[in-house]
Image (cartoon, rainbow, N blue to C red; front, side, top):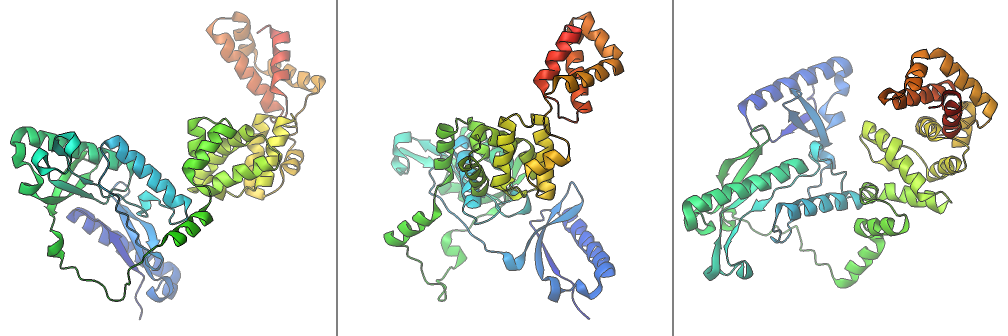
Length: 413
């Protein structure tokens, strides 16, 4: 006989979740055995980490255990507000992705936050001076897998501590209460106590003889820094200055290094930066969202992006056609010029041809024509509808400006 793959399902916090998880995994394995036979074995598939989704009543894959490298980062306790915590967390998430340490998909358990929260009660200029005040108990809130949960957790703990200070005064201190582990409940929008947290000596730690200390000297640090290249904050600053992007655009294009590299390469090939940005953050972002990946991973090369942006700037295609061509580029890998020609998407500026499409749209939509002539609130909507009909008849090839000009001449809209 043989064993099926081992599924380790993480962080179950109720008997109901445990029962439903076990039944789901058993049913899933039995279905895979029926489908794949011995191909669904521990020897062939290995061990995997999964998570249980209450909303789906199902488990979802997180990662293969052989791929697991558990990195933990402990910053200095120097964050003074929820806003600072969120800024730090987002920056850390971006840096992890930027450096290729992890995809950092929080929903799949690839990155989590565990804030340790305590309030200082006393002179703000003398923090850590026990004669000038005291700290409230440290709450460590475990396994937060979304920015929303992190933000709500921090605010809840702050509010809870402030209420305890009002009620108990200095009795609500770290010295008297100690450290505690808590968990956040999304369904309650609140934290719940898990256990008291031991002091360091309670863990009975001892040095691991096979793990030698790693000491990074200045020369090694400088060498690594030189190999990393431009980091996200520096690149965002450059985009704001060089490309005149909005804060939102620059932020979206520095979520990971390859997406920004794609933009820079297209601009270096002679394309207009803003047109490239609109293409990447428009249809490109939509496709990336559908595929669950970064924009740079959807399968478009810098040369394709640059050529498409140039065709758009030169009036060879319009925005509607560019959108369709972008999708086809991802699907086929063909050049924009080849797709535009084969799909009949090259812009038509011939007034005679456009006039024919305009006449067809007018003839087929008498109610819209009547609404244009009637004026008032319906006029603008009807005029826009007719413009859309002409663009549809032309399969996006008509020049929008010429369409609107001819419609205005014929209808007076």
